[in-house]
Each structure stands twice: as C-alpha cells, then as structure tokens.
Length: 175
Image (cartoon, rainbow, N blue to C red):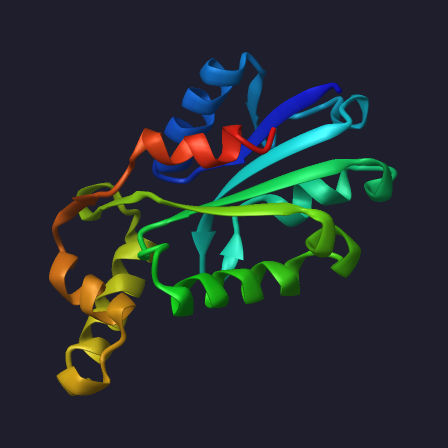
C-alpha cells in the first residue's frame, strides 16, 4: 500500500510528530499545503494541530482527493489538552466529525496526541485569543472548572511541552 504522512502544524509540535513518525515507518512527510500528488496514495496518515475545535488543514487536504472512498485514513490530532480525559477526546472527535464526511469519519483510525504551547511563539491573534480565554476562565469557580480550563490557567503565559514520541507506538501498531 502506498502511504504518505501529511501534516498541518502552526507552532511545531505536529511537525515534530509527523517527522518522527515518518522516520520510524520510512514514509514521506509533507505539509498539507505543499502536497501535489495526493491521489497517488492509497493510505493517508494525516496529523493536524487542533485550533478552535478543528484540525488544521484537514478539510483542505480532503478536498484535493478525487475518490475519498478508495483511500484508507489515519487521522491524528495534536493539541495541549489531556488526551486521557474522555471529555477532551469527545470534544475533539465531535469537532472532527463536523469537519469531514461521515463515511470518512466512520472508517478512519483516529488518534490524539499532546503537543505543546509556547506563549512566546504565539502570533498576536492567538495571544489575544488566549488572553480573552484566560480572563474568562479565571472567573469560573474552581469546582466548575474542567480539566482543560485548569490546564489553561496553570500554563497561561508559560511554556508547556507534552510532546511524547512514545505515544506514536499506538499509531505504528495499526499501520
């Protein structure tokens, strides 16, 4: 089967995972906006950063494929949220389900990895967005804070790196 890794990364965590996975399984990794010959591949492993409930570049990538039904998909999300928390995973998967056709969602193998957040690297738009979220979250009573909100409050304006290449093993096992 002809495989490729395609990724959408804004600040680098997803790219790190994509390149490490590519090295481990000896498959090319390319950014979603640079892929030209996507229809030549039967098996697409897509890694995308999570932003506002969506997976960066996933929809644009799928639009480049002539016959979606003929392809096999692995979709891997990368975000700061704790992927062992079932509420986080449900929220992520609901976002994916809204982005892609149902038949692709139902047949894709889906994984979630933890990335990193470096406030010093955020662009102005994301810094403003995070500041607004932080200001809203800090007013939520502690007993009503979700694990995701607690994580944001703990890591706000700091560097938090959760990248763990060992978590790639679960993906490699299904390839």
